[in-house]
Length: 213
Picture 1: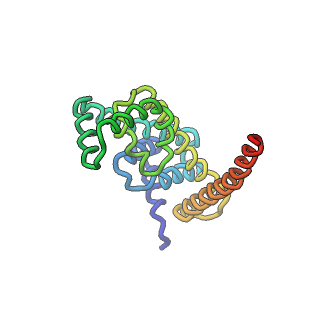
Picture 2: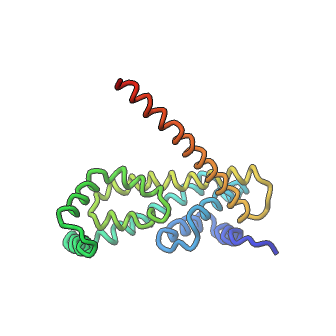
Picture 3: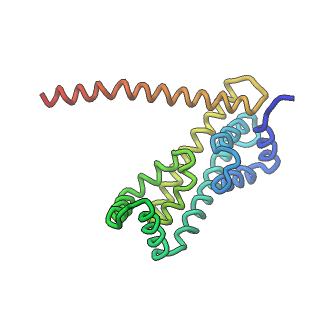
């Protein structure tokens, strides 16, 4: 018997269809039993196998993830400004941070909350707790949630698309092996892009220095 835990996940999701995808995407925000990349790779693989359409599977994950994000945000924001402030300043004192510095950090967060909300959804693990942090810092609900959903779309779409493409490219019936191959390919692509960026950066510095001369 081959080891293929992700096929069990796919079978469960397949039994409930898009409702199952929605439920898993929402639950992943609170109880990440399966890493999000594993879940979304499975959604892409399932779409390639005809279990659901690629667009419908993607949309179900975005709605589920967006709902989970909103619940986190409003649950913590519901503590109120006074409680949030006491918690932040109390925690800051534990780590030796002065009130002025905490206030500057809060002000800086509010100035850049839209771009931060987007970027934090692209960071593993941190993306799950970002809505709680934002609720604690009293972020603007509309701008934060819209930017977060945009980040969720990029994160989910990246892995769903990778799973879909890998299923078409690799010939294997083992869903877990296929997901590992897809993830490996994605990591290699990221490493190549990082290497190219590092190679280009010194040239840009040299060009800038030449212009100054």
